[in-house]
Length: 136
Image 1 (cartoon, rainbow, N blue to C red):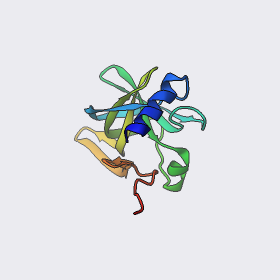
Image 2 (image 1 turned 135 degrees about the horizontal axis):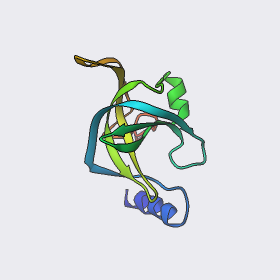
Image 3 (image 1 turned 90 degrees about the vertical axis):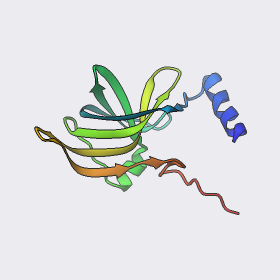
């Protein structure tokens, strides 16, 4: 485990891709409208689907998942959608990003948030698009 961490840290220090460091002490849980949707191309740090939202006056970059996972499971988020995000804030050399653990799409009404769809993206073992099992 330490060797993997040292290898990742070495990449970031050597000018390689900026790998996020998850601050597990900084969980996030918020509702916000989606301001923008972006696809970060492969070969860049954190490639895949990102959404932008403003929470308490702060613009947030929210990482959803790699595009092959998004396409495989038909994850659809549109500009203007109301979302409920549960995840963790991660820090990179250049910016902060929220790693979504769970995203719930729905509609904000006068009676509160009415969820339409909940998508689970990761758990304590890591993201669902990575095989975290080990063979004996």
